[in-house]
Image 1 (cartoon, one colour):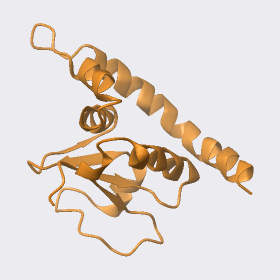
Image 2 (image 1 turned 90 degrees about the vertical axis):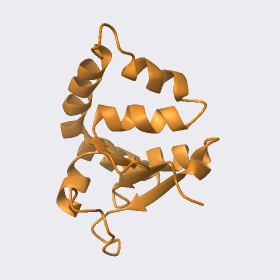
Image 3 (image 1 turned 30 degrees about the horizontal axis):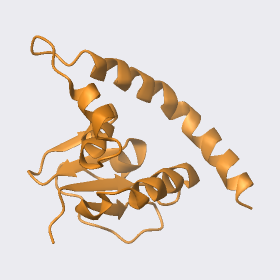
Image 4 (image 1 turned 60 degrees about the vertical axis):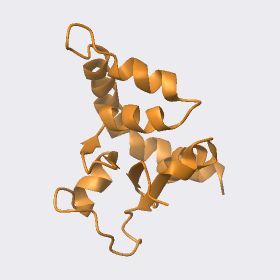
Amino acid sequence: MSSDLTVYYDGGCPLCRAEIGHYRQCRGAERIAFVDVGRTAPEVGLGPDLDRADALRRFHVRGADGQLVSGAAAFARLWRVLPHWHSLGRLLDLRVFGLRPLLPLAEAAYRLSLPLRPRLARLIARRHR
């Protein structure tokens, strides 16, 4: 069965593993290929437009059409595949007069969260010891 979406995630990051673990349990997850690009994962074919270093820095997804998106746009694309999250994904992708006004705000929030990721990952790792 082919996937509607390929999600690239850092399997070495406790925060990423927890989040992806949640998405894997959601209805609709069978339509998604989850690819661990962590440093301990085997080399995987990410495509010519994505290397492991970039995949580890930001959240990326690739649609069945081959289009690669990252950050908030990637979350919106993922959420649109999962029925429970579909409305939030549509809201981020909502176009008003040809513009998607919420996506830049979500991207700004995503970028602000990136420096917190290592700290959150350490907190999660400590909790699971």
